[in-house]
Image (tube, rainbow, N blue to C red):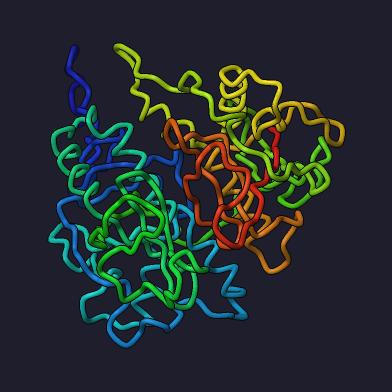
Length: 426
């Protein structure tokens, strides 16, 4: 017999995030961690990322004896080591990276990729975050952490992280790996002469920053996990009308496809070499000018505004803000980009920190580079603080804060700072 319908009965309560329901940032996930990233829809790796902030394990990246042993090598299946390392930085790859590291170095001993073995939880699929996953955690802690449902926990973890640096599962070279600073958001490898004479960093348990006021910081490993389950097999996003590397409608090179229309457009293209600016400062002169970002009563702090200004889709707004504040007849990076007439377009702008990193990863860091980029520094439109701005070092993709009024390196090699404008469309 069919059960009777009870008039006025309440529907079953929706499942919580921990119970398999939808999640928002700051919720407790199914593994007991704090949700810090939402992809917006199910991807090949899952949709959400959660982290176990209470576990901060001070260890080297590789076990003893493996300091100079590469994890990624040329492969007929995976492609070149360069291709694999570039992919290993993206969101979704932390779990695959971790498995690959453990396969290369063994499932014993104390080193970063084995941090998942420390988790006492109903879930056993924890891993070391990729470079971009670590950056997403940084963004969460700076933007959402103090106002999230688990604000007290997040704030405490944020304070702990600020006094340390976190290993990622992304290998940069045979003897170098990426790590994340939580004091300012910088991601380093320390390779390519950044620290003179340094042959590798995989055996380190302390950072060795060069050219910065930050003291050496302990290098820690923290576990994260992805959920819900998905295929686990990397699947390229659907290709739209403009493939990466193709020519865009403005005459530039397409380097990003968001997959669907966003508030800023769908695609991004970067100007060709002939439209590159060379030896330009970011700030037109040394005069004291109004700050770009200030604390807003009842709104965002200047620090949070700078975090937001790093993201994809922010380059145009950043550029407009800089030019509106730095009114000058002198030429500087943002004005050069905004006034650029290149190809068939006149709506170019200076890329944000994350936008220029996409340019590097999709066009420069590949077996057959596209775009004729220099190996030196390129300006971004994302301010670091009142005196400094983010740049990207196109030798290896490291991003550094540089003094706004500089137009070239002071120390050898004295490469001039460069500007590659980008534009959005679609």
